Length: 248
Image (tube, rainbow, N blue to C red; front, side, top):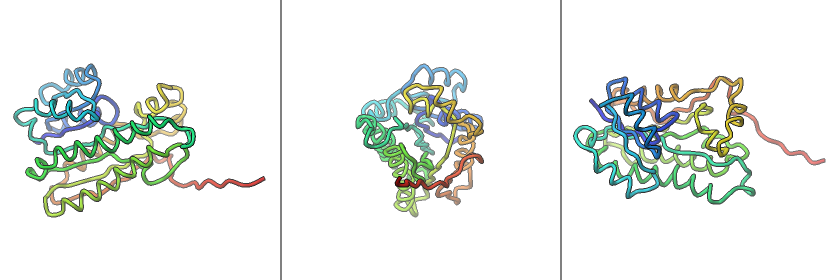
């Protein structure tokens, strides 16, 4: 059975993806910072799931964790770069620089580092890489600033990686969701559950399970097919809406 490594498996899309892949017969390595959540997932998914606890920004901890893998779990066929976050909704001129740096370090630098680390094995096994981008990387909105910039990077890096891997048999896909109700907005607002509830109220947003099923679908297509990018939104979300400021 093939093995997937899914970053950010402690909540939301990553957690749902771990469940979906195990249910489909895959072996899964799930990473995250919150060991108690990974332990709970391990209790649920059993021997098909191996938890690795580390912060994706910590390369030394990552390398030590990956070195602990053995057997089929050490042979990664699919990398799902899911770990990421948004911090703050302020306009750029009011934003906290430390939050900007954390988003860049997590959404860009850590993703690049994990990809670079696993690329030799993925090329050897003619595997696949699925990166979680966002519609925020395609359509700008007030307060998106650096988060949107990091996701634009993810979206386009995926296409550039695909170009570099031409002829290697490695598939690369950028999955770019719109509104997905997870812990995303709670984290972004510093723990404000009311803000999250208000954002998704009446929208019928997508769920972590929806995106997990999309990831699994891409991963299980015949190996001669490559989905370059998928952009998906709930029906009640739209990308239209230019802002116009009027004088007087």
